[in-house]
Length: 594
Image (cartoon, rainbow, N blue to C red; front, top):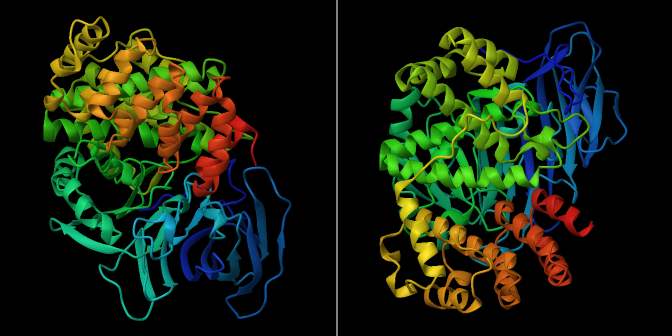
């Protein structure tokens, strides 16, 4: 049973209490020469209240016309531009109108879509395209009701050059066809931000009976080897919190400009190539996106003010998957690294304490502003606190029931609080702490940093290395996971003697490391030390990745160093066009660039 949200969403022009979209039929042609998609979006409507119009969300689309289901042209108006939100498309309806068809095309300012030239891909032979709709960017490539509280089913027909293949967040082909036309469907209701499209020179490799990976041919073998545990992750997730209802779970590895680590598009996670480390050490990201199949895709935050309900639950679920597969020590290392990231975010937001609450107030702001480690790590800490208070067995039963009861429904913070109080029978003391997590800035005083025995040993080695008690030859790096490497680098004081830093970099190739997480951590350490000798390596890294997790902190750190700032601005100017709009928007603010 689908429970459509009828509450007002401050980030959408839609009025779902009056007229709500129930199904989308999309027909698009992809023109890689002009870098435009054009076609029609048919929207099936549910008329909940007497109303003579429906309002859709659009941004930077060319609307060419609207027709009613009787074939006649509809009267419509494209409203004024509103910052972040775009323009409302108001369409006049007849009393008997059941569906409308909007003819349109994307523009160069359609921020969800990134068109890549062949040289921006791994194969260097064919162009590529992908979309990224979260939070409110789907309206930049499809005119619809773009709110996480509004769910609908969809189907699509995508036409493109026959040497390319299209895939979407629905049923998918596993090989190219000769026609260049691909049909898709999603028969389970999803919000607009979970509709995604990618197209390029793609091949598929199965991993188990329900899982597989798409990638450019040059990346396919590496990706398949890296994600060999996907089916095991899926089985572990089902054992924790119930059946996986989406059918298949596949992953597509995108070109480097993809702005996120991963995006939980149903049936087809979009992933950055930076998680391919060669040893499977960064695949907790796959566990995270898989966990979203329950927390986020099944039970979804009603508005972006409640983003923590998507991400806090998912981080908790991800760590439980990793613990079940690789043990408690492994999961604890992830928790420590996550807590370190949270401390950095709290420091970054010290002048904006409102943004360190779980329950956000994003009126008049881009909802992307709320997508920080607060939602992820502080949200996870709250769930861990509740688990500790009621016991793991009871908490697991609670989460299983939660995902089942609210399947295909929107969830907000107040509803969660009421549900938790009722199902977990919380004491007044525990309830007070829960509310403090949600509505107060920072962290409650009861929060204790997670501890990892493996990391404690790494910290001692970092101290001994900096005091010259051990050399690089004495470090047991062959036994280290990526996580131990990261903690070692994070434990090094940027002010350590330059010869020691040079020795580390020389012996382990950290500034050019094949593992993106290790390389990033090292470059951040050296920028903090104002080590100008690695500016060229930083430039090379920033030109090879578009993942905002890496790009924004590196530019931010360089922008705060007066001696490096001019060089950093020049580096960004050269690489800016290769980044997705989500990444550009974040970094533009540092350099006043548009």
